[in-house]
Length: 450
Image (cartoon, rainbow, N blue to C red; front, side, top):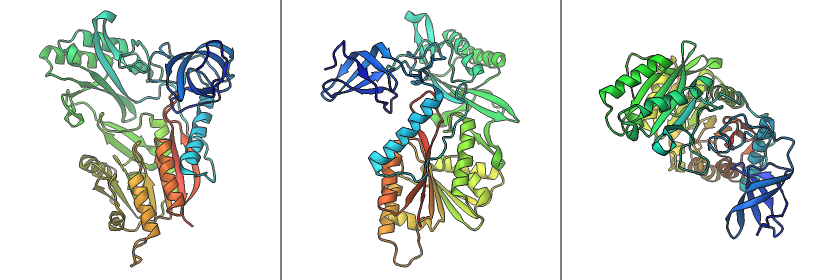
C-alpha cells in the first residue's frame, strides 16, 4: 500500500495519460496529472490487489515538459487529458505508445519510424458532441463535455479545442435551451463544421426526445440568424436527421491535393481535424502509391475518404463498408466528383472468411481503415489464405497494405497476424496527432510482401 509520505517516481504514461509509478511494495500506481520523470506524493483514490489509482498532493520534482494548461476547465472537463504536457512531448509519448504496443502485443518492429503527422493544436475540433442538461441547482442549463470520470456535464463557458466561434456559442446555447419549452427533453447538441465555396458552415444538430413546439422552432431560427449557424433536427436515430430549413447550404470537406469535395451530413462519421485528415490522406496515398495498371481494395471505406483519392491514381478501386447507407453515400460522392473507376459494396467486415477474399478478387494493394475494433477477421482470413492458397492460382495476396488505425492495440494484434502468419514485413509506422491534448493515438502502418 502506498504511504502518504512516500515519494513516487513517474516512469511513463499509460493509454489514459495517467502517470505510471511503482510504490515501495512494487505495486503499480496510476497517478492522475503526473508526468514522466516527476517525483510526487499522492493520495490514493482507489485500491485493487495489483494496482492503485491516485492523485498528486505534492511535487518534489516537476517535469521540464510541464506547461500551464490553456483551458480554464482543464482537470474538470473530461475532453482533454494532456494540456499540462508540452505538445511536442505529447507526440513523443504517442509514438512510444505505438511502438510499445506493436512490440508487446504483436512482436512487430517497424523497419522505419515515420515522422508524426501533426496540425493545429488549438481550435482544431470540427466535430463535437455536446451534452445538454437542465440543472436548476447549478443555475439552469449546462452545455458541454462530460466531467472527467463522471456522467455529469462540465460547467463550461469556453473550450480551447473547439474553433473560437463555436466556443463562443456555449453561453448563448445555454441561454437558448434554458428559454425553450422542451429544455428537459433536449439531451444533446452535435457540432459539425464543413466548407461551402471556401467559407466555413457550422451545423448544430439538436437531439429532441419530443416534438418541438412552434415557439421553440421560432427560437431556433432566431438563434441561427443571430449567430450564423444552421440547425438540423434529430428526433430519433442518426438517420432521422434533417435540416430545420431546407434551403440551407450543404456541408462538405475538401481534399485539395486530389481535387475532391466530399459532401456529408452532420451525423456522418468524418474526422474531427480536417487539416490533419488532409495530411493523413496525402501520406497514405503516397505510401500506397497506386498505379494506373493496379486494382486496389479499400476496406472500411466510409464515405470514400481514401477510396476517391485512390481512384485518381489507380486503374480500379473497390470500396467495401458494412453499411448499405454508407455505400450509397460513397457512390453519390464518387459521382459528385466525376469518378467512374470506383465501385462500392456493403458487407459485414467483422465476419470475413477466406472464401470472401477470393470472391472479391485479386488486388495489387489494400488500404485498411477500421474502427477501434480493428480488422481481425480481415487479417485472419488473409493469413489463412496465404498459408493455404487456392489451388487454381487465380488469387494472390496484395503486395502492399496501408493500415490506418485509431487504436494501437488492435493495430498491433492485426500486425502480428500479418507479419507472423501472412508473411508481410512492417516497413514503416508512425503516429497521427488527430486529437491533440488527448491520449487518443491514431497511426498509419505499411506492410509489404517480397
